[in-house]
Length: 265
Image 1 (cartoon, helix red, strand yellow):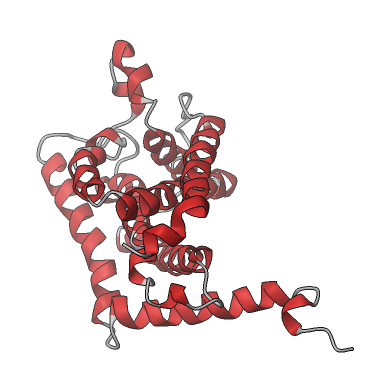
Image 2: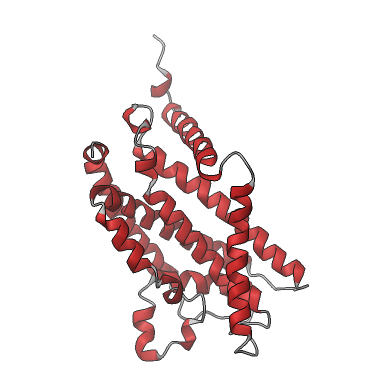
């Protein structure tokens, strides 16, 4: 007797791969459009932010907190923050975006979450590489890059964005007011994430509270990779991974329990 494809070893994984790929293609068309304008804007937006920060702080400071190039310093912090901000928002809306498709047995809410995460993570990584490479070439820089530190920073960033996105995906669909509350509480996060300064410059009495936020650990980890002289003594990757695991498990467990009821809202 023939074994159905879905029950064969790897059958479900292949089915999930096809579903996620189809959702990613759908997402590309709907989010970025059929013209290249959407992708161009994704590159221009962080460039504009980096240029603004560099111009403002160069007017008051002789040198940035690390190195001698203002765009390179602010890019090393702003790009990870942009990555976090964009992907958490996209993942949070994934169930509502794909709600019409989730009524089909072949599509699960996990497929919707994975599709948005993978597409936007790949897109933001491309933007990250293009912008940093452009700054290095434009200013004729020769940085000594610590690649293991960069890869650790990416792992920390992936874990945090996915966990926050999954948790917000549940909270925004179960409690519509949460989207507004999150938007308000997230506004000062660029200042609190260490984009503009280093944790070492925070007064000792406030630093412990400041480092409860996982984002300064991530921006500092990237700067440790981009600046050979930066030690990043306050970085705690284990804290970021544990924080991400707890938040992500919270979101996933509640989605597993309530996703059918949420889809009916």
